[in-house]
Length: 117
Image (cartoon, rainbow, N blue to C red):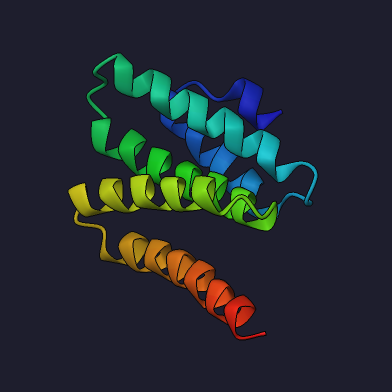
């Protein structure tokens, strides 16, 4: 209900971001895809809130990478994590950069484990 009643797209993005964080395993990817699409759309329109939409784009892309990682699609996961990292770097968002690097590190750690066995 709050999503439909939101008057500003930045509020919609925030609601979708929050929903993707608390929804169950089946629902969160849907909210994340909506967030990704909305952020990409707003960035194409040269919105004055560019930094806000870039941050949501980085978060949503990072989540797509996480989903790809869970589905054992390592190349797609790394592609998404790299894209997310670059956006966070552009924003000088050290916390976002660190989170994305952690996600990348877990992939490389998993590959190392599999190579040892």
